[in-house]
Length: 605
Image (spheres, helix red, strand yellow):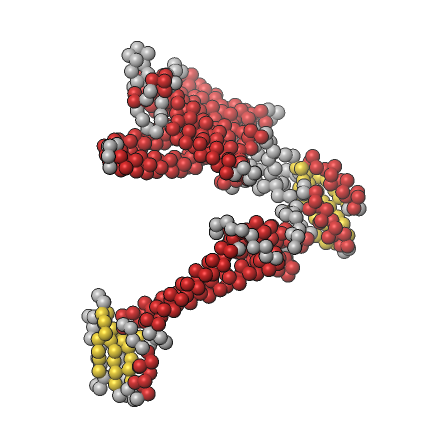
C-alpha cells in the first residue's frame, strides 16, 4: 500500500539550524523539499569531494577482493588517486609512443641523430611521404631514396646540400629510433602493470572506501538541505513531507528543541513522494520496480501485489519449460547461499524463486522439459500433464498440436481479460461514490464482449472451448458499455474523451489481443529448444561426436534462456506497466520517498 503523507513546515533560529538538521537526520522521517535552489561554495566543495571519492570507489570495485591494507581512511583515497594520476600519465605516454612508433615505422629503424650529424656537415636530410600514383616535382640537386612503401604511399629520404622543399607531405623526424621507442613502450607497459598491482593491493579496502563515499554523500545531502532552507530575518525554515504515522515523533522533537512547526494535509495540486509498504510476500517485486526505475504516483494505485502475481504467470508462459524452471531454482538457491547476510540481494532472488516455481508448474502441465517431445517423456511425467493444455483428445487418446495451441491461446486471452477487468474493478471501487465509476463499469462490459470477439477472430468458433455468445448479446454489451462510458465522460466534463471514445474501444480490443504474445513467445522458445535438440541428435552421442552434441545443447539452450530473459523484460513487464496500468490509470509518475538521514555512521580513524 501507499503510505499516507502529510506536509511539514518547520521553523527554527539560525543558531539552532545545525542542531535542528542533526535531529531531523536522526528522525529519518522527513522528505525535504527545497524552498530555494541549494547553492554555495561549501556545497560545491562537498560535491567535488564526493566525485573524488566515488572515482576511487569505482576503481577498487572493479577489482578482485584482497586483504585490507589497514591504511588510514584520510590517506587511502589520496593514495588511490595518486595511482590514478600515475596510471593516466603512463597510458597517455604509451598512447603517444605507440602513435609515434606507428608513424615512423614505414621508414625503418634508423638513428635520428645521424640526420642531425648530416645537417652539421652541411647536408640537409628530410623524410617525405609520396602518393604512389603521383610523382611530385623534385628540385634540382635533391637526391631521393625510397625506404619503403605500402598500397597507397611511398616513403622516401630526400637529401641535398642546400635547404629545399618538395610539394609532398614532409614527415617530422622523430626524437628517437624505432627500436628505442619499442623499448620505451615495453618499459611503459611494465610500469602500467606495476600500477595495476598497486591498485589490487588496495582492493581489500573496498568496504572502507564505500563508507567514505557514504559519508561524503551524507555531507552533500546535509549541505543541500541547509542551503535549500528559506530564511526570514533570524528565522530559517524548511518544508517537506512525512508519513502521517510519524507525526507524533516530529511533534515531540519540535517541543523538545523549541521548533515552530505546522502540519498540513496534502493539497490536490501537490505531488508528495511515494512510500510503498507491502506485506512480506509482495516485497520481491521491489527488485523489478527498482530495475526499471518506476514507482506509482502518490495518488495512484499500488499495484505491487498484482504486478508480482501476474508477472509470475507471464514468466511461466513466456519460458514455459519445467527443466529451465528447475535450473533457475537451483541457481537461485545457490545464490541465496552465497549471498547469505546480504539483504539487498534477497528480494531479487526471492522473486526469481517465485517466478521459477510458476515456470515449473506450467512446464509440468504442458509436458515441456528442455524441448523434449511429450511422447518421449517417461510415463510418470506424461501423466502430470494437462489434457486441455496438451490438446489430448478423450476420444482418440491422441494429442493434437493445433488444439493445444488454441487452448493455450484461449487461456492467454482469459488472463488478459481478467487482468484488464481487475484494473477497472479496482477503479470502480475507488470511485463508487462518484458517477465516474460508471465509466469503469462500462469498460468491464466492453472488455468481456471484446474478449469473445477476439476468440472468434483469432481462434475461430469451432476451436473455442467455451460456448460463444450470440452476436446480438455481444453488440448489446459493447453498446451498453459505451453508453456508460459516455455518461461518465459527460459527468466529468471530459469532452475530449467523446472524440477518442471509438479509438479507446479499438485500443481495448488490441490490448486483449496483445496477451497472445504469452503463447507466441513460449511457442518460439519451445521450437528453438527442440531445434537444438535435433541438431545434437544429428551429431550423435557416441565417441567424439558426443562432445559436439554436448556443446550444441549447452550453446543452444544457453542462447534460448537469454532470449527468454529478454522476452520477460520486453513482454512480461510491458503487459503490467502498459496494458494493465493504462486501464488502472497508473502512469508510474511518482518519485521515491527519500527521507533526510545519514547513510553511514561517522568513520573512526
